[in-house]
Length: 214
Image 1 (cartoon, rainbow, N blue to C red):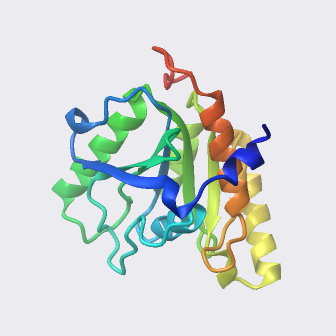
Image 2: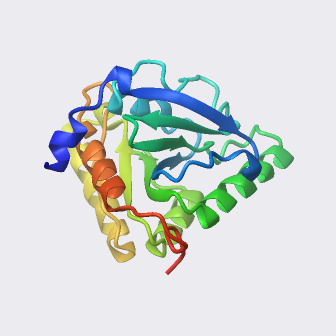
């Protein structure tokens, strides 16, 4: 069966919330593949997840950046877990809280055996932040596949959108990363994201080196 056919079977009824965790001790024990979503606060991650998985309100969309303060797990089609990581880079969050989030996310990414792939989000309207670039560098050495999703492309005119995507693609090339444009309004890029996820899940297998660094 082709990956696009498998992806097309997803529906609003095939996703359910599993749990939110604030420490590594709380991570699910099930030996199933996990796909994580990462990005700075207010990048549009919750909106993307809701559109990609066709379930309004699956991930809570907030006007307050930095609201997600735990790692949230969702069971998708009884095949894998979607992992919504806390957003980074929001200055108004207390330093101790930011450090706690960063430590939790870093430990998850570095040690999680079930991690099969990561979707990294950046905003089409802005140049990548220093933390975004740190993620690009980290992903270049990760054992699992990753995809950079450029959100809010509908907010740019066609020429500016093409230029922004081309510029980012050139920046990502040395890292061996690729990007796709995405809009929660027009739903452009949804199939690309689903295809990436499906292929990453299909390629994953449990083992001691499942998410080791190269």
